[in-house]
Length: 260
Image (cartoon, rainbow, N blue to C red; front, side, top):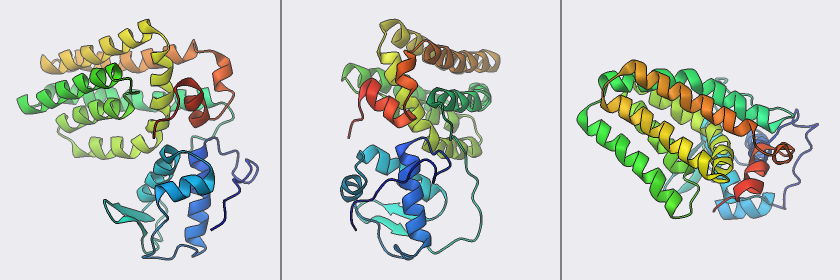
């Protein structure tokens, strides 16, 4: 296929991220049978070149198609198109003219989920599950010391908490939300990395959640998780507003650079 011309925001109802635009094109091509059932999508590298975006954007777009039951990914086999599904999947509409508002909406959505998840984990976690939570927190610090953004490690920390809460639906929900959270967390962590006091605050907030889970104190865990979400929102509000004139993924690239 020739290099795609990214559609205008008029055609995309003001889609606000590169991942939105790539998803829109691939979705249309699957529906138009340009990629029929059982065929394979091109590799990440090929699609990144075609659309003129990073592989990170391609991975997010493919993850969204997978969440909608349109494709399946297997290690070593690539991404294959599934048989059409007549069901209409649930979607989160994060389109907005203001990318700061988009990230803040995602954080607001997380508040209730993260708070109850942490409280349940404090009530129900096993010793082995707590060890995994602690290892996940240590992995964030290790990633930061190595100069990485720690986004995947941050998501893994919250995922381990979801697994400890005793309700697998929380893990499923967090996995679904991660399709939308990834870019938001790239932005928030890139912002936090700009200031040492921000990074310290994030570590203290994560540690407070972990400590409450260790002491099996649900109320403290709930409060710590809420403080973490409120802290993330407040830190974003003091960022240079010029960084928010672009879509979320472009703002993330400006702040910290996308890593392949």
